[in-house]
Image 1: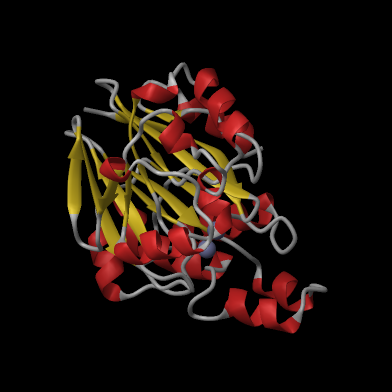
Image 2: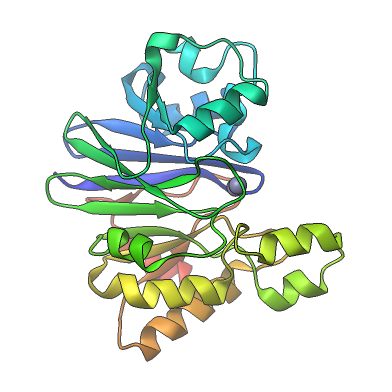
Length: 277
Ligand SMILES: [Zn+2]
Ligand SMILES: [Zn+2]
């Protein structure tokens, strides 16, 4: 089965990614947008929230779990299953998670997989300053997608695990010079630039040169609104891929707005012509 996907938000202001197989199995990765927004975003892609087969949490930072930090979380309201690592569950409960149905809370540790409909979702350990942080690959029968945000650095093992995907949603958080020259507090700069923070455009380019050889596209995610520019991030990654002899379309996901739907049957080739101008 083929895949299609979009983001409802992708930045430190919020993260939520919708992925669907062509047989209609739908999941969310992260649910870091306000409840009403999430409901209307799903309506716009033609999905009733009850049709979501599961919500997969990468880590418990607010921009990824905001819809859990209310009295009656989105997942509870619609009877949805949530999958997260032990570290993420601990952190979520510590941060003031609302009322949960314990039968719907599942553990998915790094290197473990779960099957939802015809989708296989696998968690992969990553380096970030949150307990139990993971990224995910999502495999249908014919296509595979990797979603990788919020990591300070990557290991050869992680890149090996992410090899061979059709779609890469990949963090290009900041431009190093913009980050260093910003008015942000020194401690925040140290965090973002450090090995448990976020990937720069150059780090993303280096990883994607090793990953994206056979990919149908790369979608840059979690761009800093203050310390990056979409055109700059796209230009850096495009030119690195080109230098490596790879001709892979590169897109970016909007920080606060929903992206178009991409993937099978969504005509993203045409969209790329508009977005790359
Ligand atoms: Zn984040
Ligand atoms: Zn984070």
